[in-house]
View (cartoon, rainbow, N blue to C red):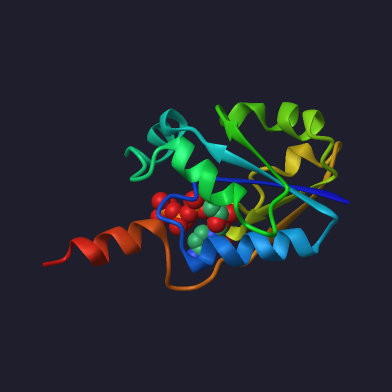
Length: 129
Ligand code: CTP
């Protein structure tokens, strides 16, 4: 089973690591689409702290990750899944139901997020005086 997942993975934290490790355990290869700076801006209204090339470098270095590529648009998921020959899409449960229309080309599993941590929370905590 070739597994694919997507995300920004800015200011890398343990919630990111856990979903990638769990995704990898569900198959034999893990492919990760990493949001471009522009896509992140359109999704979340802010520029990532680390730019795309740095985020790619970090995710690519993980033992549980086999392939990384830039995700340019949320609308291209079907193309990416077919292009990378993935048969399982894993997403965090903040996306539950959102990608069910892709179930004609792959299986879809939404995994529970790690509680009490996010990029936004880390940035806010560090910024607090
Ligand atoms: N994720 C997770 N547990 C967390 C945070 C993120 O499992 N505590 C998962 C998300 O569900 C997603 C992937 O990690 O599948 C990438 O999430 P991303 O949006 O990049 O990270 P967040 O920490 O949620 O970022 P932000 O605060 O900017 O929304």
